[in-house]
Amino acid sequence: MELDNIMSGYDSKLFDVLAQSSNRTFFFASNMKENTARWSKGAVEYFGLKSEILYPADMEWLKLIHPDDKAAYLKDFEDMANHVSAYHDVEYRIRNAGGEYVWVNCKGYMTYDDEGKMDFFAGFVTNLGVRNKIDPVTGLWTLQEFRKDTENMLYNNKSGVAVMIGLSNFKRINDEFGYSYGDKTLYAIAHRMLEVRTKGTRLYRMDGSDFALLIEEGNCEDAMREIEKIQQAFSALHIEREEVYLDFRAGAVLFPQDGKYIDQIMSNMLVALENAKNVGRKGVVLYTEEMHLKKTRMLRLRDAIRESVNDNFKGFSIVMQPIIDSKTGKGTSCETLLRWSDERFPGIGPMEFIPVLEDTAFIIPVGKWIIDQVLKDLREWEDKGNNPIEKVHVNVSYIQLHDDELVDYTVSKLREYHIAPERIVLELTESCRIGRIDELTERLQKFKDQGISIALDDFGTGYASLAVLKDIPTDIVKLDHTMIKSVLGTVKERKLIEFIISFCNNVGIIVCAEGVENTTIMGIVNEAGAGLLQGYYFDKPLRVEEFYNKYVKQIS
Ligand code: C2E
Ligand code: CA
Ligand code: CA
Image (cartoon, rainbow, N blue to C red):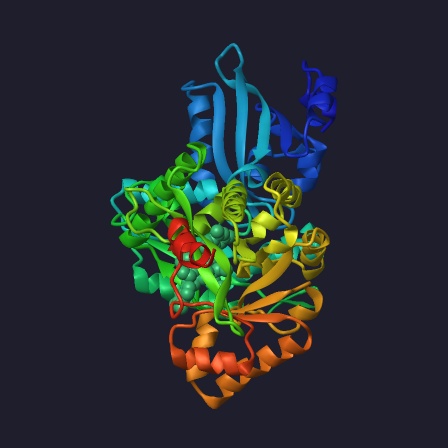
């Protein structure tokens, strides 16, 4: 059959132009009476058609359509034949050259001859597999489909369980090996999951490296069983000869009880997943009402803190805890600790509000405010004469150190209040050690260059080891109170602390023992050579005025 025959009466050039339009949209024109169709070259390649000209056009195309979708397709043609509508607009799955079914949307317009018979039909087939139904990277259903399927279940009064699966270390894989390796990993994960899932469990690719499971009429046990199977399948994943370790977490939501509409299910899955990041290796958490309350408290807390910061730090205050020189038994320095009070959050402590300040980055302005307050107090004490407090410790977290202005700000405040930089000690909380050591060292050196001292806080918790001391310019090591308490434990524990103290002393680092709560502990750490002592045995953190009366004024 000649091209011109099919296109008789129609502009073949126009077809050529339209056929070029996109590699995802395939143009076709058919002569209904001859039962022939011309397809764009892209379609021939993508669907593996015999040639640009298809004959018999209806059968050749129909045999590629998914068996479940044939009826819908034929019904639309029947409607066109019966003049119900001249517009054709159907979604169906069709097999491509690779043998995979993809979703397409087919839009066309029918013209009729004088007798009302179907004559010429032309339109576009758009590959939805690329656009919204099937994720091109993994071949799984997309987020939109997850929403649609879940909504359908809710609409039909079906119960079920929805699970969000997150890979918290996936970003590292992308960073280290590049995006195309990342995509291959996602593809491999998806296919491994498809292999092991129970029939009836639907799998979706959500945002980024998140996946989801949907089990109609499923309960908590079904979800756990499915996740366990997937988890096992993840234990050894090889991509291009690399062994990939995946940190697999999952948050499950039962519906309708914990999600009556789709957005609620989505947000509760994320809440459960967030909680799953804080649990042990298993990492699977079922959403509970309590989590929701915790989350809303956190959000309320964020708002309240934002208000406080914007209202000139209303509600924030500092307290000071004396640090005792073990040789003289006198309080010659102090640690500044932040407090925040708000009637909506009675009794709230820094363990709860500091992480919120860090998450929101409000710790940056609040940290500067603390420096200003402390230096102002120190200036006042100086002016009153004979101030025995030589050094003031201020806590800084990771995010504050990444604020390039902090050094200049501190230096300018020291000048403003005429305080020598040697009197400031920055205590680096545990969070400071999450980044790269060389970068941290570089940042700290800027403070050191100004004469400001550095203390390593929370030593003995987390992953801090003695090895960090050789890199980080440290003046003081603060042994965490959990570690200090262990001097009352086994001989080994006590020896370890004694060893750390003597090691530090040998390399010129002063050790401050925190959490000295009684004479026994004090005796042991003193004997072991800790230069500084801090804890409830001496005093708890005090309001500035109280601290002044007890540790500054009495001697002056
Ligand atoms: P941290 O820096 O390790 O502070 C010492 C904590 O131990 C303080 O708790 C203090 O009240 C408590 N403590 C003092 N003596 C004893 C004792 O003998 N036994 C026991 N069990 N605990 C004792 P606080 O004030 O609740 O602060 C908790 C944490 O919050 C601090 O731990 C620090 O990581 C953070 N934080 C507090 N203030 C600030 C701040 O201004 N900036 C930053 N970035 N973090 C702060
Ligand atoms: Ca501290
Ligand atoms: Ca500490």
